[in-house]
Length: 146
Image (cartoon, rainbow, N blue to C red; front, side, top):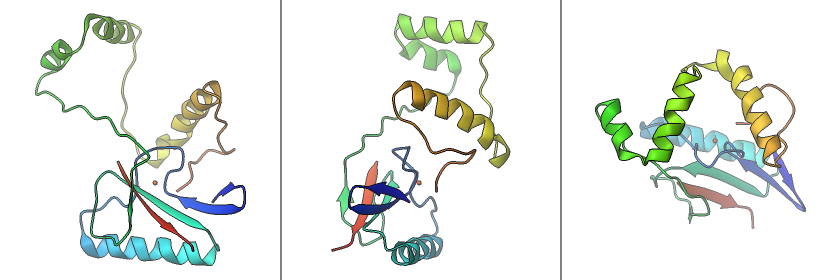
C-alpha cells in the first residue's frame, strides 16, 4: 500500500512500469483480479492500479501514463550487436571485459537484486521501502473509488 496525500493506493509493482496480472489463462486472470479487488475493498484503498503491457478482457479503463520500450532480439548475438551504434558496442565490450554476467534466478535472488535496485534508486533520488523484498506489479489499468 502506497500512501499519497489524502488517498490510499494499491499498485502492482509500484517501483516499476510493467507487471500487472501475468497469465494467459482467462480463469486465472479473473481469479487474480477478483483477489486484487477484495484486497482493494479490505484495505479501503482509493485507487487500484494494475500495470499490464497490453489490454485484456478486464473491464477497466486504460491508463497510459507509462511508456515501455522493447527491442526484438536477433537470432545471433553478433547480429544484435551490429544493430547498435559504436558507443553502445564499446560500452558492452567494456562490461564483458570487466566480467559482467547476467543471471536468472527465482525468489532466492531477490535479496541480491533488491540491494542493487535500492542503491540505484537512492542514487536517482527515489528512496525505496526498507527490507529485502519488493512490494506486490504498457498499458496501466486503474480502478478508482468514486
